[in-house]
Length: 283
Image: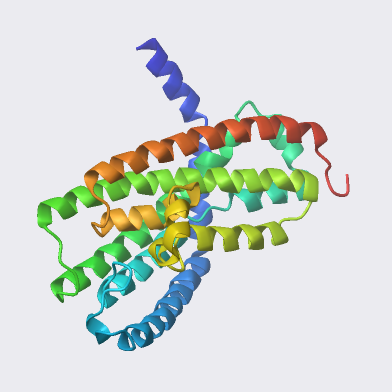
């Protein structure tokens, strides 16, 4: 009981950062509308692209390419677009701004964990994106596809897939933020973030299966499916669509938890090394 009280008091120190993350997401509503618009344009572009691919397939629009029908392919792409935007984190950029402006000096003097501070800020931001944007959009999307007969799910199995999907949603947030924190640490050395962000976004989009399902990449895609990036898009979506069974989901969940542990240990040692070499621009 005493340990639980201490843990509760410790976590209470980070609730202001959670609220700050939510306020940040609410303050920039135009950004949210922007990615909804851009995401819609991307989905429409990919819709016409895959429509042309399936029309020229041997069985036309009824073809199954790499395990996906045309309707499943569009559902996958739409889900990936919404999912990727929902778990996006500003951690790497926030660290860069603190290093650039020198405000990190004030942050480090506070009696809070630097890592947990950014993690709870991320939770606040992502909480708004997931609860008020992503989940409603995904609900509407799947209702439309199921009611129109584009895809078929067994009710009980689909309910189980949704529960696993929510678990992997949390896993994706943790992995994505850990990677963002790691990229933020690199600004201690580079003093710049734009190029690093471009590189990271390209790697994340390709290796996560957000642009193209990993099954389209053959044997290389199988290898990529076991990398941490796959948990940022491919694995959660395939589970939601019922293309990964319960046994496979449990294996992937165990692997993902291992990646989270390894990445946080790596971030701990990286932070201890970076903090010794901090250089504030202009200071």
